[in-house]
Image (tube, rainbow, N blue to C red; front, side):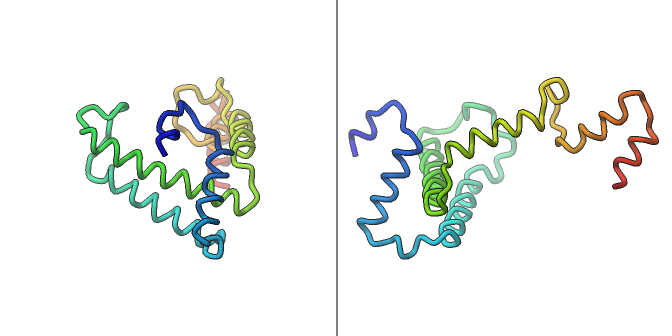
Length: 145
């Protein structure tokens, strides 16, 4: 394990292989159905959420957090990542390619000119585009649909 700790970065492919090997060595493939992995992932997201529960907004970098708290956060983030990688592998989805494709789709859905500095959902931009000339009736019709 020490060799893992010394590495600067790790690929999704490497994680996928390590998770498959880990599961196979323990004869856990029989339990790793997509449904079971998804439910385990959701459970881990819940554990991750508990870390932030009742803290209010937390600034970037987590100022004021103790080292043990950051380490615990890293462990829970890792659990989520590892289950996600394992689920994608079992489902036959190349997670890296899927993520890059999703980024490309989001770039189309959220063009910089329309969304820079805005937290609006892409569907609200379509409504706003119909209202570029101040036609509130057109905007109202778009929202009723």
